[in-house]
Image (tube, rainbow, N blue to C red; front, side, top):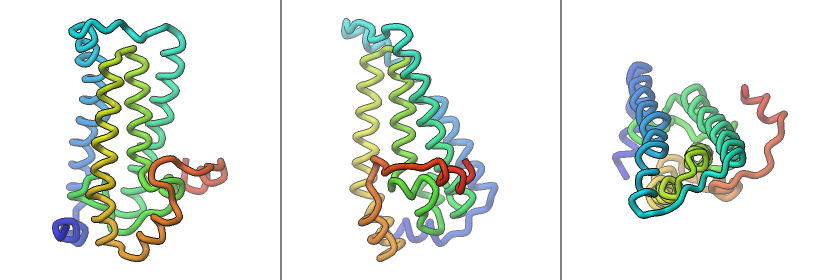
Length: 186
């Protein structure tokens, strides 16, 4: 856990933060969706699982989930960069505890947005194996948040994090108003 404190106390240049975001952009919004659309549907064929694509319903639900999840994830990244001089990556963490913007509604809005967007991609592809991959990814990510990240945030931010954790849901957000969205620039 001391490694997290060391990372937080290091000064990271805008160049390093930009590089981390570029690498993340190659993995999360490009590589994982390609796997969900191209690779995992082959798993359905291999296991003899029929398609879960039923036409317009998949398209509407999938596209809406991708848009909503993408907006939440991007909003979260922008808040981390602009208000806390950090990134979503543990090696380049935020310098302060974020409790505004999407963090006002749940403690893990990036995870929420990512799971919704990836779920939308899997629904759009109509692949059971892709849905299973998203559920597995979500379980691993939530496990990481509960086992490692919450302890790390407690260590870094102490009683401020304890109070935030007490007041703010883990992943399922409380009511969001359009006034709140306007205040944070969305």
